[in-house]
Every structure is written in structure tokens, then in C-alpha cells.
Image (cartoon, rainbow, N blue to C red; front, side, top):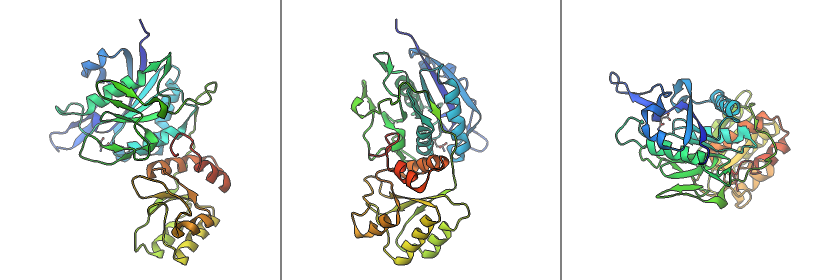
Amino acid sequence: MTKKSTILLVYTGGTIGMMKDYKTNALKAFDFSQIVEKIPELQQLNCKIEVISFEEPIDSSDMNTKYYIKIAEIIEENYQKFDGFVVLTGSDTMSYTSSAISFLLENLQKPVIFTGSQLPIGDLRTDAKENLITSIEIASARKNGLPIISEVCLYFEYKLYRANRTTKINAEQFEAFASMNYPPLAESGVHLQFNEHLLEQPKNVDKELIVRKKLDYNIVILKLFPGITLNVVQSIVAIPNLKGIVLETYGSGNAPTEKQFINILDAAIKKGIRIVNVTQCAGGSVILGHYETSVKLKEIGLVDGKDITTETAIAKMMYLLGENLSTEEFKHYFELPLRGEID
Ligand code: ASN
């Protein structure tokens, strides 16, 4: 008989573990530590499940870098004891959180699967059970004695994605996430089908897990729109202690060519603010210099975000700023795929 996998469920909050407060009619978090008893189906899985729950579960709108580190530390402390990890968070900011965790965990050799649901687990039509059960199955899946997955993923509505490729696209449908620039790593139908050629291969197998805990969150997202004033752009770059800007440009990385606009960005970069160019399109990539409208951005030294999502650009920026890199090093590492987040 094969040895039972051991899986750690980390419950942080979100709709999956919420119940209706019948006085206010609003959804609020409940004690999740009893989950294994409450869902008898979990006992049919060939694995041993333990639960660690946030003392005060949160709606994912309250997620922040302090909680990112808490999740990473829970995984670090339990890394040797468990074969895989399933992290339950609210779906609203799950792409941000799971992306950040993918950078915090270096040399990861085990599966870390984020999931949640659109309806609470106690609801009759809930999507929570399928999401949870399949995530646990994925976290315990092995081939030739090794975990099939050794990266941070997000599972939702029959699809497993690389976490740092995802975006929440729907607040209503069960299919709440999309990964526009990278295909699903697995699909759950009659069989659980892994697309093995798309998986991150474990690197540095002889090295131990390193957990990066220094994140710099003095950053901002600046989304361009036709008519944005110089005053707005100037005010953003003048924010005290600002270290980085994720600049959401048009199409393949294009922005106004107005001289004063470029001068404001140029001065900010010279002051040491790191500016990353990401596209505000859901899919596709920045190609700096492809159009005349991005030539100047390239010249003044914007970092090329390539096909990164905004959520992941934020996570990667927090992580790399925390590493105290020079301007050149920051640009170099940002433009390099570190966890399969860009092509
Ligand atoms: N508001 C919830 C959260 O993100 C939404 C959900 O989990 N579906 O915590």
C-alpha cells in the first residue's frame, strides 16, 4: 500500500469559510478548524490532513504583506512535515497573494495550491467542495515518488493555473480566474490531467527552501487613460518615500509622447524610483520600442514588464525592492523569469 500523503490546509479566510449572519445578512468568517469533520468526503482522500487557521480569518480585501509573511512562515515551519500545502484565501486578492508567495518561497520542491470559492462551503450550490477536494488531490499527486507539482498554483473551477499568471476576472461566475498568457497546468474532468510539459521543473534540488521576508510596499500602480493630466502624474511621482511604480500602459507598452510627461518619468527614474511598464490589456505583452510611442520609455530606462500581470508586477516589485538591488540589477532580475511568471 502506498504511504498516505500529508497535507497542510492553511485557512486565512475568504468566502469559502464564511457563514451568513442572519441578523445583518452579511457573510462573515467562521471557525474552520473543524473542516475535516464537517466535510466527510475529505476522509475518502488517501491523505492525512491537518489544518492551521488564522486566529481571526480575514476577507481577502484585508490581505497585506504582513499576512503574506505569515503564510510563508507557516509553510516554512511545516515544510519538512508535510508533502503539500493547500492555502485557502478569499478570491478577491488571491492572485496578488499567491503571486507574492511564489516569490517568497525560493527553491520550492513541494506543491503549494491556493484555492477558495465563490459560495460558502455550507451553501447548497457551493463550488467550495470541488475546489477544496481537487486542490488536496493535486497537492498529494506524485509520480515516481516525487510531487508532480513543485510550484505555487491556483486552482479554481476545474483548472489549475500557475498562480503568478492569474487574474480574477469575474465576481459572479464560478469560473472566476483566467490566465491569459499561460495555459492551465492541469484540468479536472473525468481524470485529473496534468500538462506536464508546462510545469516548472524543480531547480536547485539539493538546496533548502529559502523564505524571503523583506518586502517593500512603498509602491503604486499608475494606470494611464486618455486625458490623464501631468498634474496627476507629477503628484504620484512626488509621493514621499515612493520606491516603485507599476505603470499600466496601452497595448504593447505605449504611452503619450508628450515631452513633459516623459520628463516627469525620466526625473523620477533619475531620483531612484523604479518604473515597470506593464500592459493594461488582459493578454499579450509589452514590446518596448515596437511603436514610436514606447521608444522614449525605453530610452529613459523603464523596466520591461513583458507579459507579466499587474498583480504579479506588484508582487515581484515588492520582493525585488526588498532585496536592495542597484537600478541595473533590479532591471535585470525584473526582466528575467524567476518563477515562470513571464516568458
Ligand atoms: N470577499 C471574498 C474574499 O475575497 C470573496 C471570495 O472569497 N469569493 O475574501
